[in-house]
Length: 215
Image 1 (cartoon, one colour):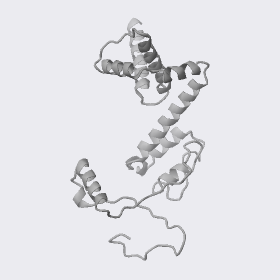
Image 2 (image 1 turned 45 degrees about the vertical axis):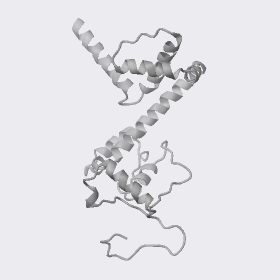
Image 3 (image 1 turned 180 degrees about the horizontal axis):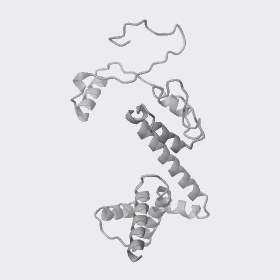
Image 4 (image 1 turned 180 degrees about the vertical axis):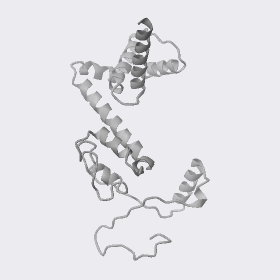
């Protein structure tokens, strides 16, 4: 029980006892840096002090067609377990947009809901893009390029590209690395806010500018 909890203690005589923590704070930790907090945690373990272990179900929850997922993850946002993503005629993305525009702003100001909701959409987009790529007849060639990729050559190309160097592939290994990058761009282009999607948007903007200038 909390130090300031004056109500009767809730518990069970036998079986599982659910335990839920919405947040733990202490004034003496507010000004500590991340390194200091880690050092305190290590000392806590070294002193063999007690810790709370929160387990997970043996079967992971699915992000696909699972209206109960978000009420389970955020019970404080869905207090009655209703209104999860997938319970309306809206698409998952539009339903999340609707929740973020809810009148009391509780979905907006929650520290994790916007991040989790957006991350799920990125994962779904990346999975869909990878699935579409894998269905193509070129999948066998793509898998061979991944398995035979020379990591040293790839690391060298990455370091040169990070320096904004104009790189033109010369050897077969360099050309293979660029083909792998192109394969990854094919998937990343379908993921919102990814580097490739931003690059495609910039290309579209430049094409509009060029067309307007010639007109």
